[in-house]
Each structure stands twice: as C-alpha cells, then as structure tokens.
Image 1 (cartoon, rainbow over the protein chains, first blue to last red):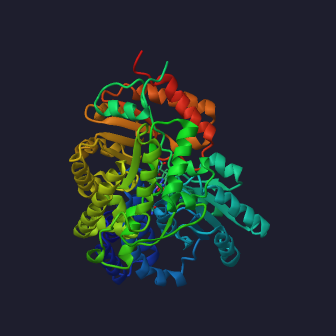
Image 2: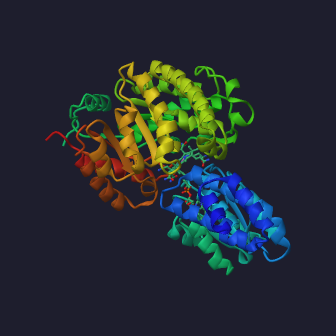
Image 3: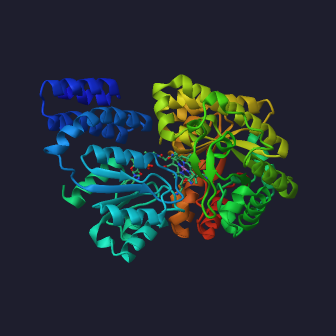
Length: 210
Length: 343
Ligand code: B12
C-alpha cells in the first residue's frame, strides 16, 4: 500500500523515494493528513524505535529526518490550512557553554515529526536568550538539553530567570541529557525529565494534553 | 601496604607486562586541574605554562600516577581552520568549522609549534617535563582523525556524509591523520606520550560499521606510526563501546581506555592483548557521596586487577571540572586500598 511504502522509504533512509511516493500519493488524492500520519510519522517513529534499540545510530536518524522532511515539506502547506493546527509550541536548545547538540537534534526531529511547532535555538545558547525567546514566543514548553555537569546548573539559572521575569507559570520546562536525571529535575523545579527522544515526545504529550 | 615505585616506574612495569607494586591510578584529571589551581579555564587552555602549573598542582593535591595535557578535542581542527570562541569559564566553543569555509583540498596541515593552541600543549609538556618528567609520566591527548574530522565539519553534515559520501569522509580522514602525525612528532619530542582520543567514534554516535570503515583504519594508522618509536599507545574512546569491543583489538593499541562498558566483559574480550583502563562513571565521581564512591571504586578495582595484561584504575572520561576534590581523593584512596599486586 502507498502509505506503507512511504513509511518503508523513511526507514530505508531514502529521501528521493519518499518524495516521489508522497507526490504519487497526492496525485491519487490520498488525504494529506493520512500521508503524514500513517506514512511519514509512522516511518520516523519506527526509526526512533530502531535508534532506541541500537540498531540505528545517529547518522541513520539524521538521514531518516531528511527523508521525513522531503515529504513533509510537500504536504505541510496543504494541511496547514485545513486540519493540522500545530499541537503546541516548543522551544528547544542546548545550554550555554555546551556544544553537545547531537541528542538535542534527535529530540527535535521526533518532536517536530509528532506535529509540534518547534523553535530550535541551537547549542551553546546564553541563558538570557532562552528567557527572551520565551518572553517573545510564548511557547507551551521549554526543552533544555545539557550533557555536561559543568553546564547543567545553567538550567537552574534559566528557570530562576523565568521566575524573575514572571514567565514561569505559563510554561512547562522539561530537561534531558546524559548527566541530568529525575532528582536533578526536582531540585531545580523543572516540570519533567526525559531520558531519550521518545520520552521527550511522551512528556510533551502528557504535559500539553495534546 | 607500602608504595615502592614512582609513577613512572609503575607505568614502565605495566607496559613491559611486569606487575608493579599496585595498579596505576590515573583518574583523567584534565581541566579539573584548573579548579584545583583556582585558575580561570581560559587561562588553562590558552597558556602552556599555566596548564602545566595546574597539572602539577593537581598531582601535588591528589598524588595520582600521570599528568594529563588536555583541554578539548577541537585542538587539531582549530589549527586546521575551525574557529573557536574562548569563554572565560567554559572550554572553547566551536563557532565556524573549517569545512564550512573551505574545501578539504585547501586545508593545510598545521605546524604544531606555530599554529593556534597546539603550542600551548607543547609548552605545557615542556614545562611539566622539566619539573616532574623524571617521576611522573606525561600523557598528551591527541584527537584521532575521526574526531578531528567531525570538528572540521558541522557534525550533522559529517555524519550524513559517512553514509552518503564515504569518499569525501576518507579525504578528510587522510588530512586529519597527517595533522595528528605531525602533532605527535612534536609531542614525543617535548617529552610526552600521545594518547589517542576518539569520542565521536563511539557507539553512542556511530554504528560499529561506520567505526570499522572510517574510524578504526585511521586510529590504526596513527598507532602504527607511533609504534615505530617503540611507544606503548593508549586509545581512549568515551561513550558506549560495547558493540565495538571486538574491533578494538584490530586497532593495535597497547592500552585501551573505556567508558560505558561492562568492565568484566571488556577484560574478557581484550585483556589477552591489551591493558585495560577505566571506567568509573563520570557522573558518579561528580555527584555520588564519598561513601558510595569508596564502595564502587573498590568493586571496580577488584575486578580490574584481574585483567591479565594489567589494569589502570581510571574514570570513563575526564573528571568533570567542578567535581568536589573530596570525591577524587576518595577515588584514589579506594583504589589504593585494593589495587595491590605485591604482597
Ligand atoms: C559525542 C560526544 C562529544 C562530541 C559532541 C559533538 C556534538 N556536536 O554534539 C565532542 C567530541 C565535541 C564532545 C566534546 C566534549 N565532551 Co563529550 N561526549 C560525547 C559522547 C561520547 C556522546 C554524546 C552523544 O552525542 N550521544 C548521542 C546522543 C543521541 O545522545 P544524548 O546526547 O544523550 O541525547 C539523548 C538523551 O540524552 C535525550 N536528551 C538529550 N537532550 C534532551 C533534552 C530533553 C528536553 C529531553 C527530554 C531529552 C534529551 O535524548 C537524546 C536522544 O535519545 C558523550 C558520552 C555519553 N555518555 O553521552 C560524551 C560526554 C557527554 N562528553 C563529555 C565531556 C567531558 C566533553 C568535553 C568537556 C571533553 C573535552 N574536554 O573536550 C567536551 C565539551 C565541549 C563543550 N564545550 O561542550 C562527558 C560529560 C561528563 C560530564 N558529566 O560532565 C561525557 C558524558 C563523556 C563522559 N563519559 O564523561 N563530546
């Protein structure tokens, strides 16, 4: 079936096939929303599972995400107008002084593929920039990543800064990365900790109720 | 029990397969030394004499068995043209990778005595060698070609090219290998032992297949080159290495330093040919209580010293900068309690 083929193409990391298959599906008048959910998203979610099971590694996930976007970019203009109102707005970034962005990028791919609107501030992001972006963009969730024990306390600074600017009550803060854990999340009053990208999506779904 | 050897003698016995008095104890105290010396990080990684002074202060504080000359793995890539910022209180942060500005063909092999911060390492080695070289081995960390390659490129492009454009990756590897060799010449000349580090080759990032195709051949080439000097070479890969344990044998490394892996499994697979270094969890050394550290390090060292060709008690990767000194002391004391070979 067409949608299964799209899913397969993503799992096979093939952006050209994905694009072609999506174009064909559209020609056959298959509902874009169906293409998105049962083809593209199903594919990238499976890639996420393969990554969790250590059958796929970072390069494979990055290629799969290219394949995903090659299809997604064709259909997103079609569905924006009709059904798909983005579920919630997420701001993501790696805290200042930390350049480990591989994990953050993977979280981003899966969160975006799950239909959220995501603003990526990149790596080594200054505390002020997180806070200013929250003030400007009013996201539902702020997702912070840190892989270093030296920089993870900056998550605390960011949360404190949000409190000072009276922005904290309107936003959920989730955190992740190798040295952080549940206890640390509690300590700095983050709303939740996630251990991997699939977890990040689960958390966001739970927190935003969408 | 009594210590009878200097750290240098202890390391010397290890690499000729004789049992020293106790196992070498070398937690990877790198930039953490700047904390001990109460020095701004920026000073540590931009000034060779400062780096050496911090390292010597750490040795005086802890009495571990080697000096580690290291700040971060971008050092060769920077000398090849990647731009870095130098924050006062953080390690250098990459801003513009060389390959976003130039083609690989146009990238020059650096002159280690001249270019960017390579001289910082060389000066640090020289200074440390003057003060402690007769008693304490000096290890200088050299990023392996795969890791340098990724710091020359932006990581996403680089990782995608490992699948899409392997020939291009190989070109980057050849250049990075040349650069590493040049750097090693000067490191040896200055009085240190190169330790090859390749965090980006771990299975936390790439598949065993990618490791085998793009990282291993160049690790091996670099190690082969260094073997001409009759040196015993350490290969350090932090991150998860369990899926590539068997492949590590093919690198020809004499000592292998591991992070996220079951130590007993590593010993079983590698200790016929290699000395094992490792592998205390770096989050634990930073955050656990001294009591927990004492207990867990003892357990680790008891397993480690069963390794046939010898063992170095160490952390899986560098000791996080802000680790409480009490925790590092506890690590060392624990290893000193149980790490004896001589009765
Ligand atoms: C690759 C790597 C690097 C690369 C990074 C390249 C890049 N552009 O990202 C390079 C070589 C540059 C590097 C440099 C350094 N590194 Co490094 N690095 C690693 C390594 C081996 C793998 C990290 C990785 O990419 N994993 C793969 C990804 C997919 O996993 P992940 O990042 O954990 O992300 C997943 C989850 O954590 C989660 N997640 C991540 N973020 C978020 C956010 C949210 C909101 C949620 C819900 C979930 C979530 O989902 C992700 C996907 O499943 C780790 C080892 C390890 N144990 O992690 C060390 C490690 C992180 N590095 C370490 C260190 C010390 C350094 C250096 C300081 C070393 C040095 N002196 O040069 C520098 C730091 C430079 C800097 N200023 O940041 C230490 C940190 C120790 C500590 N506790 O502080 C580690 C843990 C190694 C170790 N065992 O000690 N490193």
